[in-house]
Image (cartoon, rainbow, N blue to C red; front, side, top):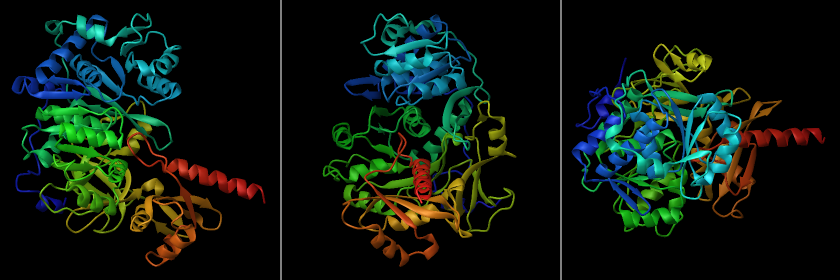
Length: 542
């Protein structure tokens, strides 16, 4: 197949790299052996070297084994970014177990579904989440609960994390055989086409491959001296796990744990800790832009910023770079691909608004979204499909979903995109988000990009709502910088001068904020459901 993007790889980047076959725990062991006294973790006031982190992990693994943890066991980690998350993650993998990712903000019902679906026997969580964890597990006998923190010591229902670390013996962790290519390292939950979350099964080799791809393509030429990765993305999300935590450990660099995103506190951390690498999502960059302290002086330590998880508006990139002096490179990935598949190259041609080009060892095509077989011509929108060593093994207990997503070695992403003549890819929106209004295809991202060009628009979401006459009609939810600065009618008139009339939203909903996930992903389904419900109520009152 034709790979036009390869000619835009920087000279130091190879299209195909050698990826070792080894368990993920080997990343930590290698950095411990090569850089034992280098800083590994910054967690508020706690600082751990790789020597200390390695001992911490093995001590906990020893106690886990003594408590009955065995190869193949599944452990839910329900923690914010902290040293306890990192310790549990590597200890579970060291013993041949599977990490089950869980958001600490989950309700007890959501956690219960994760526990039941994953068949996890163990859960590690903070004392602040104890009540909902206990509620989720009370009807599931045999679950072993481990609590971090100090307020629940002595509680019979749980083991104490700190006591387990203290009592564990570094030299008494048994050797456990792990097959990197078949053993599942992580269950990463992601949204399903049915609306129910499903677990992408990521092997050790899937995740290791992506860490190697990311490192080679993005940061290989950066100095490791005093390198620090800003860990503000949640580690329970695949983006934070791979592009921050594991990339940092792979390079033997320091990972700064940020438990909650707060722009003012984050800027203080940047000023004091001087991180060099920052991976974030659009809402983080937008929030930082609102702070007076976001200046080149405050953020001068940053060498590279990366953005993913959702499209980053062009004007946000421009203003952020003008205000801070730090470059942002957009990329793309999915839970199913461990996650990175595309990135704008460092030191190469950058196209603002593009997700970039495929990382090494990765092939991509744009196919007809209806039949999935025919390749679309350059510049035409179709479904993005991906092949590479980072692609998941499948979905847990979801054979039909797996067959639909994985076909002949290709992952069908469900994202609509196009490739230009240079091999750069551009996302047009989710396949299921495509709006067909009066027979015309409307791509939400295209309309959103135009909306972001208006100086009054802070945030924008475009989506389709059922319409008896048109099939679907275009809706937009907008957050203005100054709510009284513009009315919806004026914004529609402004749009009509810039896009075709059928793309102009028939309804504009002005809000103070847009619903987003914990990692900043826009939740359009909530907006769509609200609009559909409001429409039904109006029709019922006629």
